[in-house]
Length: 118
Image (tube, rainbow, N blue to C red; front, side, top):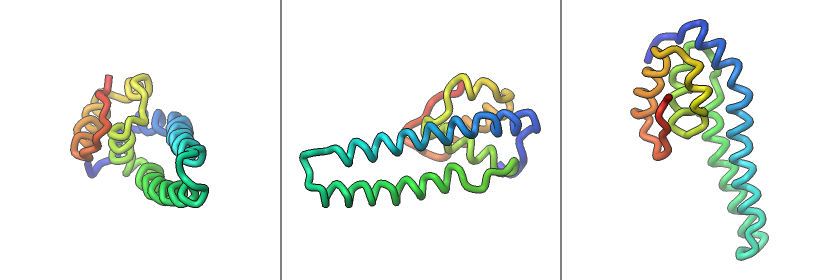
């Protein structure tokens, strides 16, 4: 999608962005905690697993949250949607046009974790 979203939708995105960012960070921290507390592996193995996870999630973070602009909002919303980071309530705040665009783009993203917009 090569066009910007409506101003009203951009305003909604700016409002929900901090909550979505916090949700992503909470998920990562939960993963880190789970790996760090896994007593079935050695401390060194846990460290390496946590290090690798952080590298992977840092790349995810960049794709999800870098380049936060109105012109990239549809793409970012689609990726966030395909990763299950948007709630139904948050999705419902967008115009039907943006919801349809995000739904279509999130299907193209091919993520294994999709949620239908409500």
